[in-house]
Image (cartoon, rainbow, N blue to C red; front, side, top):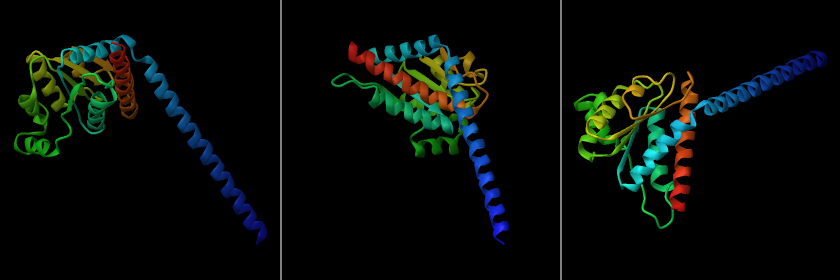
Amino acid sequence: MNVTRAKSELSESTVQRLTYLRVERSIRKYLDEVREVLQKIPVGDIRRVIDALALAYSHDTQIFIMGNGGSAATASHFANDLNKAASSDGRRRFRAVALTDNVPLLTAWGNDLSYDDIFVEQLRNLYNKGAVVIGISGSGNSANVLKALRFAGDSGGTTIGFTGYQGGKIRSIVDECIVVPSNCMQQIEDAHLVLEHLMCTVLREEIARS
């Protein structure tokens, strides 16, 4: 009985050890892939988006941000960070609005018109000429994001896309686009969040120096 139990415990220990090693390899592989993806994003593309946001700040212009699912969370996070984390003590602040945050309004437009209209209809209320409109879409093909970006472009606004894969349809209709060079949606969304943190940090530092 003792021999059987010892064999069982040894087998269990081996399985646990192999599982630990496999999980550790998966962790390292994912982190390495994210690091590689981030390093491949063209710095010039990031700088041009920062320049557009800095110009919006200098002109006291509105910034609207939108996305679906994980990108909706990033849109809210981005607006939060522009309005607070990018602020410098005693200086004028950004005027950023996440079109993802008013749930009653989103559901009203989605129910009465269509889900494709949930962002563009908000812009019809809030948009002022020259505003910056940012669309976040991993695929670059989200219909409601595309519709709002086209409205902003037709209305004289500055349009910016955050996408992945090959950029999707968004890439061809916006003024500036950052395409995360990955086919993994999770890593595309990781990169978008890193990018918004990077941008808000750079903007805060530059505003403090001005």
